[in-house]
Image 1 (cartoon, rainbow, N blue to C red):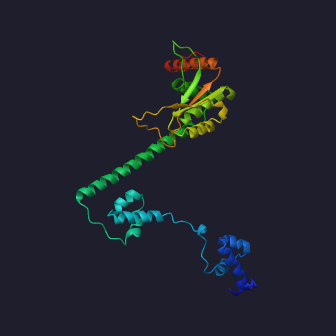
Image 2: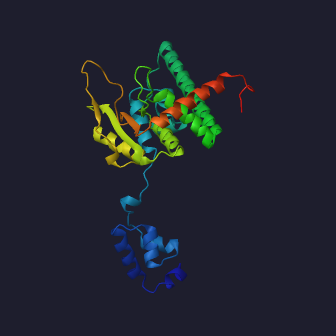
Image 3: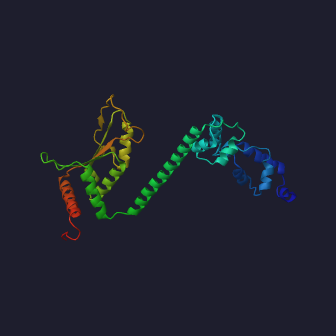
Length: 290
């Protein structure tokens, strides 16, 4: 220790500087770098008795869990019930609540209900993991799309969700409406593939009048990377007080309408391509003419 202190001629002066920096809210690392103190033992001596500033203290992630476990225990819940609620181990629960009184022993019927509930919770968790794994595996299996694959996807997507001519109303207009952002993204990528200039696109939002209209308009404009000048007047759907809407919340943004100006030729290509897909899918393999 004497060798350490000899390195610094004025220990008290150095300590005074360290304490001043500590009280100013600096961390140990900041003080060490500021005073060029490379020895941890010496740094400990310099800061002896000085508490660390609040911002340097790491919160204990289990403090909240511990408080909830104690609250549940005081309500008479068993370790099994607390484990179902919090998803933590029984050993942790025991450590947190062992000083609290044990709840009264439950009747057999109540214990059976709890056991059934725990089995059901476990079954739901297993199903959820399987569901997520299946989706993730399927997603990874797709990989990148070729230009032809994206073209076919886009034709099928439009024919399923886009506006189509009627025998009694031939308009040959290319208009796509959807509320799913991922569908809009695919459709926009498809239009890019076909070389449709962005100047030919017009957008419009369709949404309930009591939703966040301005927020929805901003969201769709950012998604399609379009200037607001490309958006026409938003269509507001009147709210019927007799109905209970389920499409509410932060994720509800109505529908986006994407219209291609001067799209008659494009519409004919879409319709022709769609019936080409139908023909190709319904003919036996090997009978397609090349």
